[in-house]
Length: 80
Image 1 (cartoon, rainbow, N blue to C red):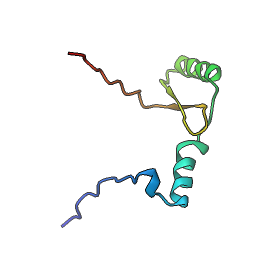
Image 2: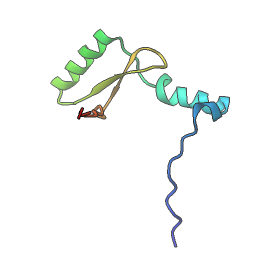
Image 3: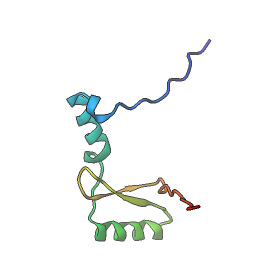
Image 4: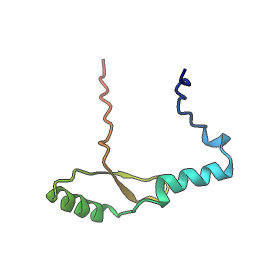
């Protein structure tokens, strides 16, 4: 019999150890390339010419931009 699938659990930042915080920062930002807004647009244009679709997002950790293959999430709020 197989083990039940474990759900991902993320602790609130206040409950993280210093090592966990460093890992999150490293995984979320440091090991990725960072771009200024003007440069990220040029990189995306070049990649699109090659047939690769990429998106960018602003990183709150380094205040630069990182590339991703994941499309942004849009939330459609409707006012009643």
